[in-house]
Length: 159
Length: 437
Image 1 (cartoon, one colour):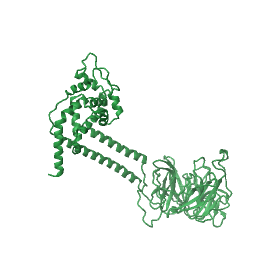
Image 2 (tube, each protein chain N blue to C red):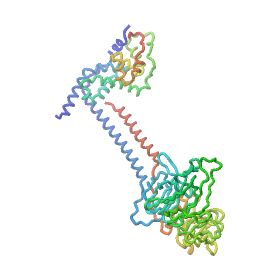
Image 3 (cartoon, each protein chain N blue to C red):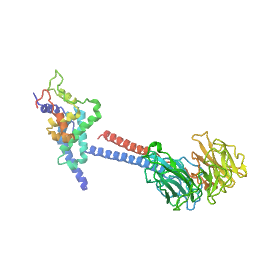
Image 4 (tube, rainbow over the protein chains, first blue to last red):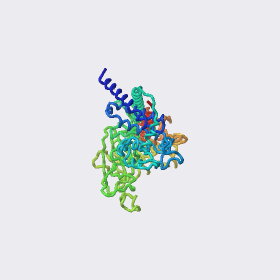
């Protein structure tokens, strides 16, 4: 077995270990980003597939790279599907009246009314606990854009 | 009240939990391999398309004619073709003897203007002539020597005062240049002029003597418009033994030139003795009657006979004037011009088929002694005039040359190339997005 084969085999094992350990967490983020089970699975698979050619280089700490692909792929997919969605300049101020604000479906629908980039900012900031600077770097957008997308009050929520 | 973080965490709990996917690494590798192969295929197709277009364009631009074998005798082509405005230039390189000159529009990728195409008398190749300091005068701007080895043209350059250019519509003319088609050398005569020369006539008396007429503009572009347009000339026709440092010498003749016989004799525009012999300075020749226009007559090699279409309007019936009088019409067809004499007994003339669009001209010849008529050259839209045909070559049987290069419009080629690359990139972009692991 050549050195290259050994190196590839090691990369594969490292990749599979990472997938086994982190796939569920990635799916949770992806679900918030897409709002659909099938889309979330698709998004995670695509992010992992895109990471494979670079795995030898990132295997020491693959998480930031994979999450960056995940977030950017989510917003790029929106560009292909934008006809299905309605983007909004402002975060929804109120959830549907007469509904339980703790209801998951209500929150999911509220997220889906955001533009993919706004949604990604919210998910990265408030679910993945990234700073504004980290969020800007992951999404490849300006800090000001992150701030304008993220500083919005959600009714029924504490900060 | 729960925080947004808590509610997002709660919602994320609904994320799917698919079964393990042990094949993911292999599928990812296959996916990337497919994308690489697809990208390479599209890039290769794109390169092929570009190479094919560039190759086709180069092929279209390249001369379709074979280089002339050394010692190939020059001849007129059996057919003149409409020159493409996108033809390449000769870059000052010698072309060998020329059969004809065609003044036409010349276009490049970014510009267009006047140009003169030289038709090779040995290969039939068409090239724009890049003549140094060519003023690109539109009328009688270039004159081909009877043997096709020299091209005379008006030189542009600096004037001592403000030039008159019609507000920049033309280049200031300061003299005449002679380009040797066999060596590429240029011999110049630059006249001292304050506001530039008003070019008038430019014809070869024979293979080495050039006959010119110019006047001097009285004022430059900076003068009031009402004063512009006037020119003075105290010399009339001048003859220049090309290369003589004295420059063109006045002949003391104010008449206009009609044509020359290429043997040192000029046919002037009128008078009882319209033939001027440059050697003897004598005026001789038969009187020409009822000739409507200049530049449609041909003087015989010995200067004793003049062929021309007779009548008050052009075209007319071809006649020959000699000392004994004017002949009866030689041909029934209407003739537009006499082009030259093939020999002492044979006249070449132009007829046109006016029913064709564009009008198509034919150069024919007729024997004065036998009346035998021969079709020499299919001239198409080419108009043989004094100074744009190597008349010495009328004596040689015209040759069938290959059709000249007809380059494509480089703007269209560039557009096609850009479109091919764009389509390939768009297709590649779409394909790379559509391919799934």
